Amino acid sequence: PGFPAAHRKTEAVSTQEQTKREQAKWIYETVNILRSWVLSNLAAPEEMSGDTPMLELTPAQMSLIQTLERCGEATIKDLARMLAVSAPSVSAMVDRLVELGAVTREQHPRDRRVVVVRPTPEALATVRYIEERLYDSIEYLLERVGPETSRKWCEVYEEILRVIEKESSVSVKACEGKETQP
Image 1 (spheres, rainbow, N blue to C red):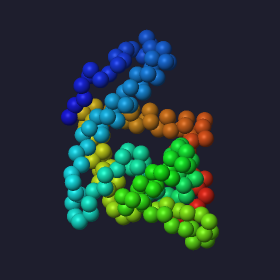
Image 2 (spheres, rainbow, N blue to C red; image 1 turned 180 degrees about the vertical axis):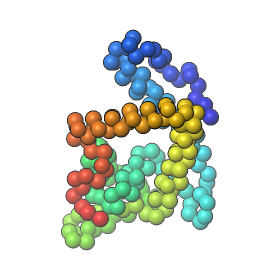
Image 3 (tube, helix red, strand yellow; image 1 turned 135 degrees about the vertical axis):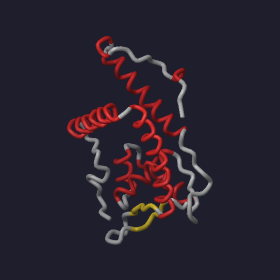
Image 4 (cartoon, rainbow, N blue to C red; image 1 turned 90 degrees about the horizontal axis):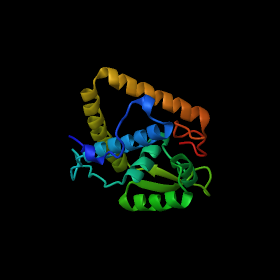
């Protein structure tokens, strides 16, 4: 597997020579290249093993289902907050996912005014299958860069998560502040 170097707009230079803006651009571009590379190596067969058909999900739809997987269920308002998008956008996405058979909309058992969204077993199976293929791609990269670089990479991401949690309203805990409880 590979990704052509021609896709890189910014060449890596010594950290001492880079301004913070150059570093930010380089990191952003590198993360996008990593994302593209991982997704390009995702070979999705027509059907997964077993009798469960593979649902065709966009990355945004997959993110919504992954959020539901962690939370069990959520309202449109909860999903909009957790995904950092508008409630109308989430509502339209949920409508499409209901059509695909990936989620259900049901009245909340204690408050009939509230509608909760839940993932279907087929959606969860599809997400798990795709996640395993994504993990395979990342594991391939980790093997190539070696244990020391892999450890450093994890340390950097741990620090990034600490800063995000400490300094913003974004929670790395997907269900924090959710109005409905599964």
